[in-house]
Amino acid sequence: MIVCATVAFGSPPLPSSPRLQRVMMHMLKGHLTGIARGTIVDLGSGWGGLARQLAKRFPRHQIVGYERSTLPWLVSRIWLLMVPQANLQFRHADFMKSDVSDVTLAVCYLMPGIMVKLADKLLRELPPGALVLSNTFALPGWQPIDQRVGPDLFASRVYLYAVPAQLAERSIAEVRSHGPTRQTFQHPERDLFVCEPVDDSR
Ligand SMILES: C[S@@+](CC[C@H](N)C(=O)[O-])C[C@H]1O[C@@H](n2cnc3c(N)ncnc32)[C@H](O)[C@@H]1O
Image 1 (tube, rainbow, N blue to C red):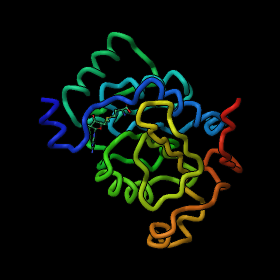
Image 2 (image 1 turned 90 degrees about the vertical axis):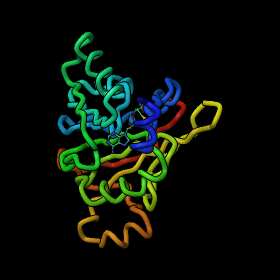
Image 3 (image 1 turned 60 degrees about the vertical axis):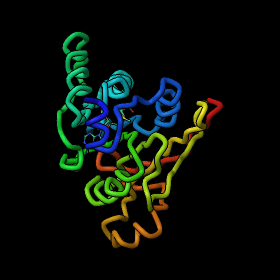
């Protein structure tokens, strides 16, 4: 079933490793502080482990995991029934058809082919100031505001992106070809939201 789902959907339900999850959480340090609302989405939540970590780490946010492969989604739902987490939910749905217009942070660990379509969707639909955190695969055409090499065997990278405020004023084609470069922008929940690389030594 998992093999069939991988062939059909192009991405196996392989979870982000605990080491890379730690890197991902560390990269988010400081970025969501002060933002009281907004949804965090795990685009392709697999078995639900990363979404649960996010739910624990950001208790004031609603975390939504989208997973279209039935078995991993079912396991994440059963796990949630057995160990409830109030701010966490899982939807058996295609994230490409999901509404991301109120999303504060989108997290993903997918495959290169999907990233092309996802980059386009997120660029069009995410609100200014929203963050995107991607395990291993970069968003084509986007300029990361931070990137780290994980302590794993493959030296996997984790990329953090921010949607700039100026996006509406610039043509999407221009952003696609050059990538957003601003690191300071307006956020709907805050007056000014400055994204700076997090100091690893802290
Ligand atoms: C590599 S797993 C990542 C799991 C989890 N996000 C993590 O990092 O631990 C990727 C998951 O994305 C799911 N997926 C791929 N495309 C999807 C889509 N369009 N809608 C929903 N889920 C999708 C796959 O079924 C797979 O379970």
